[in-house]
Image 1 (cartoon, rainbow, N blue to C red):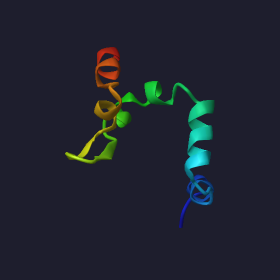
Image 2 (image 1 turned 120 degrees about the vertical axis):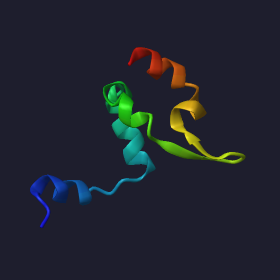
Image 3 (image 1 turned 180 degrees about the vertical axis):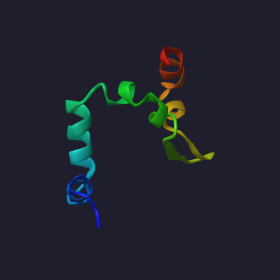
Amino acid sequence: MKNVEEQSITSIALDDDTAMQYLLQNPDLFIHNARRVKQIRVPHPVRGTVSWLNSTGLANVITSTN
């Protein structure tokens, strides 16, 4: 059985607008979670998938701060 926190999380519908709203309200999310951000992979039209940091050009910024 899931705990209360897990039940709350799974009941939230996450769509693009909700995700964007959260990111705009929490601008430090990527700084506070730099290690996790390094693990994000996104589709790339030529290479299959690439790290999100490399796709945005932020790899050097995040890596140099941690």
